[in-house]
Amino acid sequence: MDNLILVTGGAGFIGSHTCVALSAAGYRPLILDNLNNSDVRVLERLAKITGRPPSFIKGDVRDRTLLDRIFREHNISGVMHFAGLKAVGDSVTDPILYYGNNVTGALVLAEAMQAAAVKTLIFSSSATVYGTPERSPIPESAPCRPANPYGRSKRMVEQMLADLQHSQPDWRISLLRYFNPVGAHQSGLIGEHPLGNPNNLMPLVSQVAVGVRDQLAVHGNDYPTHDGTGIRDYVHVMDLAEGHVAALRHAASGPGLVTLNLSTGQGASVLDVVKAFERASGQRIAYEVGPRRPGDVAAYWGDPSLAQVTLGWRARRGMDQMCADTWRWQQQNPQGYESDGAL
Ligand code: NAD
Ligand code: WQD
Image (cartoon, rainbow, N blue to C red; front, side, top):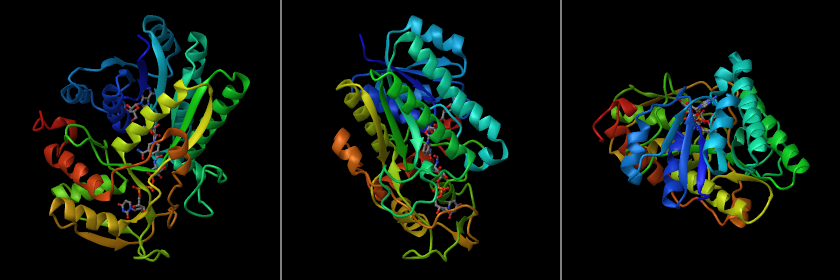
């Protein structure tokens, strides 16, 4: 069988949803995760959705000995590399932690793949590599000027993998730049459960709706946007997941390197998200407008047309569904995977 896909970071938010999409498309995911930002109970939830528990190995992607063993013992046809750290603020205070996890992780993985002659790789990159964009929608050809260590770690890995593919043209590499991933699987069984204090908008909005938090702090309403609040390109995590399956299918068509935005092409403001969440949940979202958040860009959204042409993929789920699915997950699991209500 050549449909076994190694999914590093597969217990996390985007990786777990991609495991569902992989299973639906006839692939078998093998998750490698150190559970540093995830909960092992996601595996039971995945089994419930797909009818079969995913194979799971607890371990670190920087562990070369472990990777060599995994490639030796399993007939892996491709790798999706989600494992990494993603909090921009933490990357500023502890850059070495971020370069170590994100850059060394990808390097050790690429070395092990090369040794095992597994040459299909899909990498989780981020719109954060663009830094402050000159215009929106942002095409993939826009200059990359990441503004923090997290973004630079993603850009370094992109460059390393491009050099690898250039030197060994039989590799099949997809660099997928996600915009703002939100939402949850429509079952409400899996979703995003940030450990510690979340910084991202959608988890905070849903925590206000469910009553875990009193109100949302809106970071500035004096931007040059239709309502003064920041605009982003929110993309449903199941659309992202399906984009990965499309990238895997594309890789099967031949070697090469593709760099693609996974985005909707549409921007929504903070208050647009608040209103959509109120509609989806029937709850009022209390908020208070505060100062701008340092480092924030007023508005950006991605140009998804290259992904559509290359992969035949486009985001199908809109903001109302992103909010409805987030709300179902949040309501059924107010404590994330510690809640047992959904099982
Ligand atoms: P997540 O934290 O939920 O998932 C990452 C998973 O990787 C976690 O389960 C964590 O335990 C695991 N992990 C971390 N370091 C590891 C290591 N060294 N070895 C093994 N496992 C390790 O994050 P996510 O939102 O699912 O993001 C997945 C990927 O997508 C990350 O690389 C992230 O940088 C990238 N990305 C995320 C976003 C976003 O806003 N969520 C946007 C763009 C790109
Ligand atoms: C969205 C909007 C905030 C919280 C980050 C990373 C990026 C990528 C995705 C990984 C902005 C506003 C937020 C709050 C608010 N991750 N906001 N009150 O900053 O666009 O992107 O996550 O690759 O690299 O930087 O996402 O969800 O934090 O913010 O008003 O309490 O919501 O100012 O306009 P961001 P976000």
